[in-house]
Structures are given as structure tokens and as C-alpha cells.
Image (cartoon, rainbow, N blue to C red):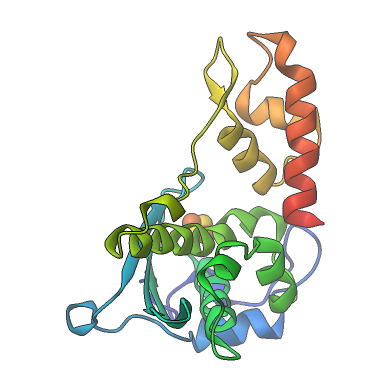
Length: 217
Ligand code: FES
């Protein structure tokens, strides 16, 4: 895990949007909730791991599930990510177990926007950090379903090729939006989508609209 006291991200400062990290973000960074201290002694019902294509950081999530209600009774995490990833995942882990815990289906629907709202926002360039936790959580939920023999409930997030020439998928578009690309020009400068196969541009614009709505409301 990134050492909280050493991270350059802990100092309140102007972010790219002209604002500061909220007090809630700072609290969850300085006092992370549900951090995994000793995974060797933890009996998880499911675990998931994801890496960030944007920055190369890694997030791990472990869950415990009440098999009768399929509600989360515990959610632990560990990351090599930055302060924003720590704060966002700490908040996510709090949200999914508060009020007797979310059902697995509710937890699977949690959106980065929901987490960011509870955090009081994050700088735009840090939004990709906030999606690591919920991606790893969905992977852990799939792992639980796999281990409990409920294979039909597993949902795999697969990429669909949008630009057949450059082999750019909908996940690439999603990542670009999460990194702050909110116009076609910006998406193209990040991904080059459509420069090899212009016929995909209308679909790219639709996806951009969809992901902007999904993550930013
Ligand atoms: S920069 Fe990698 S998780 Fe934030």
C-alpha cells in the first residue's frame, strides 16, 4: 500500500479543476477504513484484483458474504495506488457494508459517481483511481459466485472492438472518458480511435455520451 505519510498527494492543493481535496477525501486517506492488515489470517468468500491501464497501479479487494441473504458482511482492500485510490476505496468499502450491508447485486451496481459524491468530489485527473475499487469489488463478487457454484451469476466485463483497424475497444473509450476526455477530439488524442476507421465515429460519440452519463451524471 502507498504509505500515507509519504505520498505527495496528501498535501491539500489546487487540483486541475481549481478546487481542493475535500475533508472527506483527506479523512479517508489519513484514516483508511477496512484496510486489509493480514490477508493470510483472513478467510475471504471472494477476492478480486485489477490493475489500472491509466497508471499501472493495482487494487485488491476481499469480501465476506452472508450466504443466506447474499449481503456483504465485510469488505477489505489493499492497493499500490495513490491517495485518491485509497480514499475512494476506503469510502467504497464503507458504503457496501453500512446499514447491514448491500446485497451482492446492489454492490455490483455501485458507480464511481456514487463514491465520488460521498467523497465530495475528486480532481478530474484522479477519477480513474476511483474506479479501481469498484472494479476489484465486481471481480471479488464474481469470485464468490464462482466459489459458491453460482456460475450463471458471473458477469465478465469484456471489451467490444469499436475501431477494427486500430483494435480499440469500448473499454478504451471508457478509460479515456474516466481520464477526463469529454469531447471527441480529446478521446481521439488519447486513443486515436476513428483515425484508421472513420466509420466508427458515430458509435464512439454514443459511447462517450453513455460513459459521461454513467460516471458523471
Ligand atoms: S494514479 Fe494510480 S491509482 Fe491513482
